[in-house]
Amino acid sequence: MYGRRARLGVIVPSTNTTVEPEFAAYLPRDVAVFATRVLVAEVATEAEKAASLLAMHDGMDRAVTELASAGVDAIAYACTSGSFLAGRDSDQVMCAELTRRHGVPIVTTSSALVAALHALSASALAVVTPYVTPVADGAAAYLTEAGFRVAARNDLHILSNLDKGRLEPAASYRAATDLDTAADAVVVSCTNWRTLDSLAAIEAETGTPAISSNLATLWALLRLAGIDDRLSPDVALMSRPLPASARAEWTTTTQGAHHG
Image (tube, rainbow, N blue to C red; front, side, top):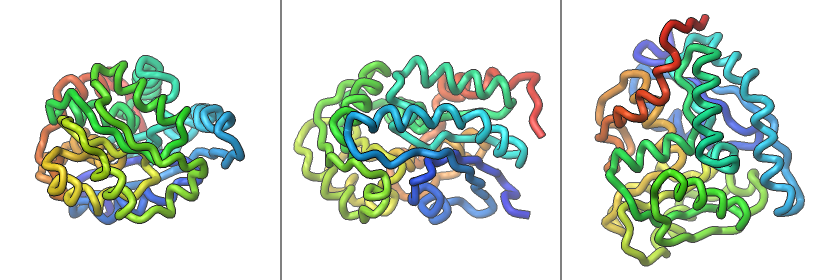
């Protein structure tokens, strides 16, 4: 069978072309990922962008129901902007409610990034995004609400999600290494941006731990599923355990719940 050690579920925006192939390339042996999608519209203006991303929340319960029926060990809503734009409190409430309802730990990419930064004991952040300004501002606000300081930003101002998925790993490397600031961690945001092939080089060039949306999401899912090995790619986060506070936040409401 596939997923003898662990079975992971991911919910991806319909226009995301990166999460599934990146995860597949870096999964440990005998771990499987199963995906479902929620519809998101490609929009013509920056003013429409946030609303289109938040509209995906309407499809979350259906998506979690589908993945839970496959007997997965944990599920991630693998969209950074879709999980940070409503704010940190709303994100935590959504995770807790879906976990309670379906009996499977539910995380979002934004909550996984927070857990990863805590695992790295980071405080000051250099944040890189492909987003247009209203969305990038939402990323900075969420991280600030979570207790971090955004020391520097580099935003590429790309509107189309499909265009983000066409970026090569070299684009995330250039954007991250262009920042010149003292930070405890480099954060490369967006699950539709190829980063897993560039993070080791970013760490080597900057001398700073580097995480991305897909790295944090994959790490959180694997740790929740009981995979405690040192993971690939070979960057600082992948040897770290999941903080106890994150594990408690994502799993306590599964007690007594059942899923098929």
